[in-house]
Length: 483
Ligand code: BG6
Image 1: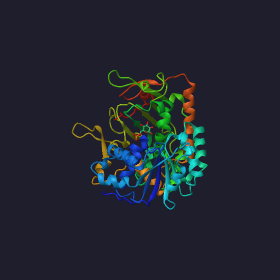
Image 2: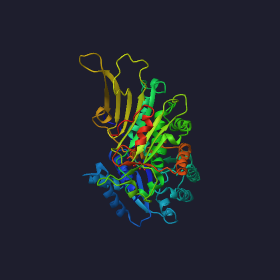
Image 3: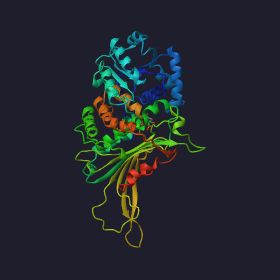
Image 4: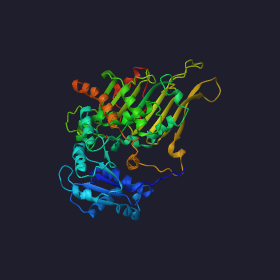
């Protein structure tokens, strides 16, 4: 299947924090890929903005090196890299001071779509938004893109929203949660709403429980200072896992449109019930001698109580889901990098066959990464003579194989940046959505802070704390193996 690439109209994209890690690893390589497949036109202009004193050639050289390191298609494609770099310029701007703003303003075209990507610390969002406005750049057609973390709690998220809204209205604000840009995360919507097969079963009458796992094999290396103030709850659960939960649990929107989709997600978040502390397990990885470092080796505080793992049972209090728990689990330094949503169905109401030891029942597993695809676990007769015995088999589909012959695979950032240019907010978080997610997360975090309990240690390279296994065992369920 050969994918269709529809070029976007010429645009001006200003990247604040243009020499930073995210810009070098994701934003510029992503733009280069879109240029390569013909989606980004050569009349587009990308303006790198940072505080360093350098001329455009020095900036382009820096980008060239980043592309060679992080953009697959840049290898042996010097002509194309050069053509892309012709679209790139550089303006030195002091985000929190007065230098450079007039020069930036003069640099912008009046008639092109313009977007400002703030790949900088959230503490600079307000300064930048205000100055864009003061220098006449925040026109009604401009868009502003901000990265997570979007606040540390409800109060700070509200303050950030208020700051951005001084200069931009909601339809101009693009809050990135890069999980929404992942191919399979969108596939979840296609699976649910483009097929008639699942919807009749997609409720608590037929679904016993749902497991959402985002397991990482990497630790916090190099990000200890940020992570130690966030922990897995703020870094992953409040945003990425929350989005996966919403897309799994939401009602079918009336149309595929930014507000119709986001309205349904907000309803799910608002329906989440408080999570008692006994339904939550926090963990922190410890050293495996001679092999893996401990969390505290990289944390700011050597006695840190920050969690690098969270598992919890979440109940969605509405008609569709009452009685079907959602178990969320995420952690660093686990056995494998593996993310999936497992929808586990109830047993048949009456079993006419002999009991099968170890039977796990029907499940639909949506693999987000790696090897994106779906697996359907089903029960069949074990082949051969000797009476009717049951066996479990899986129907497996890996999207890469099913669509063999040329899919245009995109990194999440590539897709999201092109959506900004097209003006499509469907895959971005709305202000009220972020606030609703913090309203749910805040009491959980406050409960931890008020308690003297420390996170349970787990072995780096393992499956997480013992108590996380018990969370399901005590209810006669079990987690799927990680990896
Ligand atoms: C980021 C978190 O948002 O997502 C990181 O800050 C995490 O801690 C990352 O490692 C995971 O993203 P992905 O795309 O690798 O699953």
